[in-house]
Image (cartoon, rainbow, N blue to C red; front, side, top):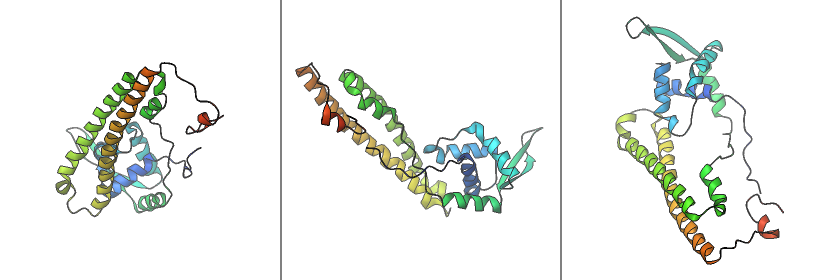
Length: 215
């Protein structure tokens, strides 16, 4: 049975990342924009940095951002980008749209689903690798948390930013709990497999009972 999802709005979200960052962070260079994205929404939204400058030029052509040059490194000028009133209106229009809930692509879950095709040790090793990555992610979030007040003091949007950080930490902790539970299941299946080497293939109603299963 397929899980119902909100209709996807096919828009180039890079432009709204740019508008949002210029709206909350103020005027900045393209390089500053890239760093701002990496240190904030980059924790949960992967953006193609190669699209930033084309997006800025496109937004400028639409009158949604403006730019001016400023002295930069010796012999070079930096271009400072700012959002316009029209840009803020376009950002608000996009924010009013329902979020596009996109189909998940989680390779760990895919390999867990088909884990019966390999020895339990293979899946346990995969779980350990993912656990290490999640612990590193959680450590990064906790570092942000430790400096949160100093980094965001006085900004009116800080409570919204805090929600995204809390989501990241909650997700990481929940994932670690799930990984430990998954280990227990894999080990139990391994014991059952050792006791009965011949695997029976699910048929009929049993096969259809799997998520998305068909007869």
